[in-house]
Amino acid sequence: MVILRCCGPETFYLERVAFPFEFLSFEAPASCEVEIWTHSLGGPDLIETLSVNELLMESEPDVPPGTPAGEHQADSQETRPTVAG
Image (cartoon, rainbow, N blue to C red):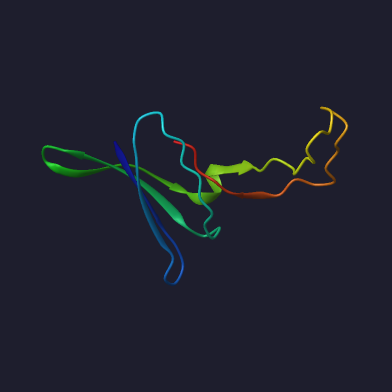
């Protein structure tokens, strides 16, 4: 189990617990910092600190139901902060 903390400008704060093999996705301002923590016998331990921009994933374009694969062409793909862990 790890704890993800995302701290950003002004009052943005997000904290989530992620279990092994769990996929976690969220949106956050681009200037946020993400911290990954674990808990050991000695207390909480910071494992890694990342910029939210390092965790960007491209979102899938909206494809209408019943459209055969390869027939739908997106003009541009939106990119947003998303975390997989």
